[in-house]
Amino acid sequence: MIIVTSANGIVGIQAAVAILRDGGTALDAVEAATRLVEANPDDHTVGYGGYPNLLGEVELDASIMDGRTLHAGAVGALKGYKHPISVARKVMEELPHVLLTAEGAARFAAEMGFEQENLLTEAAAEVYRQGLSGALPADKRDWLNDGIAGNLARLARITADPEHAAGTVNFIAQDSAGNIACAVSTSGWAWKYPGRLGDSPIIGAGNYADNRYGACACTGWGELALRCSTAHSVVLYQRLGFGLEQACRQAMRDLAAATDAPEHAIMNLVAINRDGRPIGMTTVPGRTFVWMTPEMTTPVEEPRLVVDLTAKE
Ligand code: ASP
Image (cartoon, rainbow, N blue to C red; front, side, top):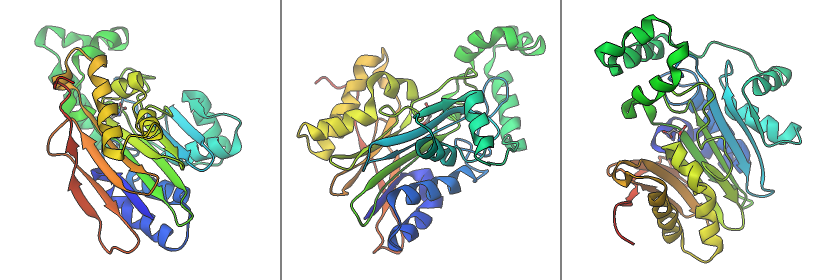
């Protein structure tokens, strides 16, 4: 039994371990832990308090996958609901679908009895205001004064701010029955174009779990993981016989072909193999990940292994 998470998941890991310790399922553990991160107003990359899109609206993405059945549920560009991970789980359990987006996702959340609320905190709104005007050159500030509606495509290129863009939470759990589940939740790229989905709600890109081989979840530049199906690649490389570390390194190396500037590519992943061994990997030195088993009283925070995408194969 184990739970593995990105560094910002530390606020949820004890709750997940308690569920595993009591004989609960990996699915329940990853959902409960993710909800705690989604409710944390100080995490501006997930759930309540998340940074908004270019129009100042918080749009959330999340996905959950059951490695026992390969069933999955996901929501994208969901507005007004604090716990997209629970809505995603309902998609998996109540619908013959995997992914709902925008109005359809909100409609379904309401139908399932989730409470609608305002997710934009004053702190996030203030950073948004400063982020947009601060990122624009002086001769372009009137884009904001004139109303930004007609300028979104140009703004999306200029205001993309790596300092505020990054962040998402990943949880992978393996329970006492050996079942693996994986959950990912995010407010996505800060100041994103409205309706933009990253890798987090896309099964295979930011999230994948298969009891037979392992699981992987990503944070970082979602467009890259989307282009390379990174989470699924990690699982597939294990299926093809690669060890856990080698599978992760290969999936990361695959990203180099999908960018003209590999030195700037930001990708992080956490993964386990089918025996529950954890690993964290990144393109950015200094990043950590966290894991814990039910026998432990406190989680371990470890540096992620670093992959250099500029290195020749
Ligand atoms: N992967 C997320 C996205 O692209 C953001 C992040 O993890 O930093 O939406």
